[in-house]
Image (cartoon, rainbow, N blue to C red; front, side, top):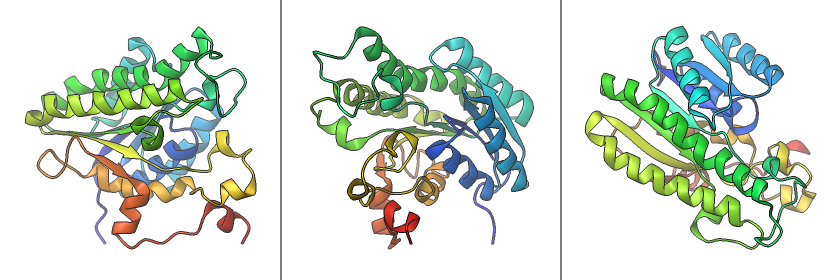
Length: 262
């Protein structure tokens, strides 16, 4: 069976664990060479080894993507080491890792200015900076795919205690739609992925009843590959829900809890 991403190069931010790791390995399994960006060297090394075990090349970048220096270095190193960038996945971000008490809810009254800036920069600014760093290369080549991650439930309607995260993800969606319109004539597709609620490290302290409503990070593989093969002619400026994608393709999955305790 022919691999869908043979000869492609992907750059995945936040690729050291969780959803980023799962998407990086999904692309490598489909034939792509994969660069991963993260801030923890041990996690980079572990995922890099898994990519090489699949027979693909990898490059690991330890960079701070809230700055143009870090984002530009991630792009330039990937192009230098792997030859090109066909696919950019902006997965770096999150919520609980960027607030001081790691609580699930911090009110507008109680969130500090520093926490607000960290949540906004880790989700919105990283996406903006990395897109900006990769775009000239993709535009010169006349093709490319950008996938930006959101959290649809909080982006579409704000929730108490999640103002900063909801605002950041709503902004990521609007940024993605604007960018899709700007670069479609350059052969670049820009789409938004809502991975759903996944059992990643920041969520492992929920109780069993909540885990029964969660998915596992590897459940994102099929939809991540689907988005990686799009063009402006097939789909751009759209939001795709991982759970809805599975339902449309009759993919049934047990919950994270059921699989971890079976």
